[in-house]
Image: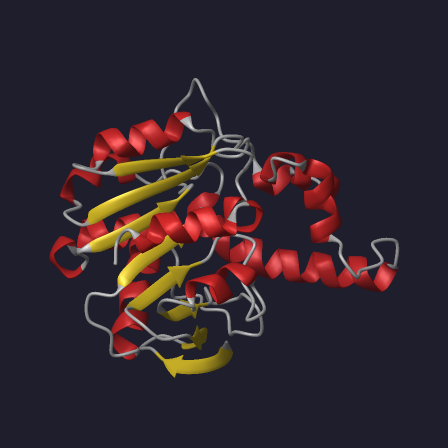
Length: 258
C-alpha cells in the first residue's frame, strides 16, 4: 500500500492505494487509517483500493473550507473524480460510513455498490451514542472492542503510554483529527441523514459487530429500514472495531458486492 497525493479543488489530499481488482474507495473513521492497516491489506487482495485521508489526518493539510456535512460529502466526491474513478465500490467505517451514505444519497445514480460498516449518522434518544470528545484514552478500548483487553494492547502496541513525549504527540494528533471530525460528529453525530436514506439506490451491505458499544446494533436495524433492500451482516465477537477484530468476516461481507 502506497501513500500518494491527489489535488482537489480545495486541498491536496493524501490517499493510500494498492491492490488489484474492482475499484474500491474506503472512507475511514474518526481514528484515521494508515498504509499499514491490515484491513486495507485484506481488501487489496481482491480490490484496487483507494483510501483517502480526511484533511487534517496523518500528514495531510487541514482544510477550513470543509465545514459541514454537505462540504464533507462534496469534497469526497471531488476526491473520487480527481482519482478518475467511475462508480467504485464505496466502503465506509463509522464516520466514513456516515460520509459514504451521504455520498450515495446526494448522488444516487453514481453509486451502485455500498458497504457501510457500523456507520454513524443516525440518532436515537433511547440509545444515545457515547460522546467520543469527552472520552478519556483509557476508556476507548471498552467502547471500541469486543475484547477490551486485547483492544487496549493493540492500541498501545510498541508505545510507552507513560512517556510524556508520546502523550504530547497523542494529544496534538488527536486535536487535529477530532477537530476535523467534530465538524460532523459534535455534539452528536447526526446531520439529517435519516431523512435522506430513502434516496440511496445502491446495493447496500450493512456490517455490524454484535458487541458494538459505541454505535449499538439497534442502529443497524434503523439503517436497514431506511435503505431499500439493504442486507445486514451481523458479526459475532466483534465491537465497533469489527474491521480489526474480525477482518476476514468484514472482507467477505464487502466481497458480496463484487
